[in-house]
Length: 290
Image (tube, rainbow, N blue to C red):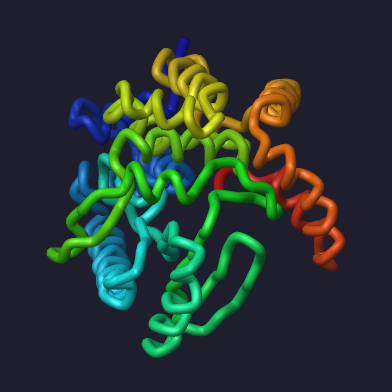
């Protein structure tokens, strides 16, 4: 059986494989983009030089903006969320968990630095400045449905982390494993190779504790199942979860998680509030990554 592109990409990142042709290099580059590993891929290959320089510049731009946001949030109860990864990658947004009582202060501090509110929802405020996006979450949620306890993550699993030479608050590595699994499974329905790298690097007792406490243990088990298929060469990443798997996971979440059960009806309100609800649902069904 031919080796999967995902395995070849992993071997490129590990330094044990180089693409055999320009066509293969292009296919692996696209696979890396979809899995949020493009910068790591270019670094491992040493180019193409123009692409690498451009991606490095984008990464420096991301860090500068992130550091400015962290400086603006000093004195507030927050933690960078879905942020710590085993390899550096470029993003255009910064996800932040924030204590509910600190939201107004955070918004004010960011607006003073030129950010503007683009979306305000029950559990999220999104601000934007010159293409850089900050999502302030009081609870991890999708479609106004809460799937993890943001306050508990902040209180029990936040710690000092380094960001561009400055100290910031972030989630522990174990908590990031549980968060990556919950986000991929319950919110996005797609597992990326980056999610697998997070699990393979930092899975341990703390990750399982957070998953159990947060009611996302089944999501972590499912993500690990997918990552095992990918590592065995039996599936490609990104991997879209099967509808019957999602149905079972959501049924379990409804049965065991009171906050999820209580906020689930918000899905209807969320869809009714959007004129493009149908287009959004179709886009989620058709997309390859997130």
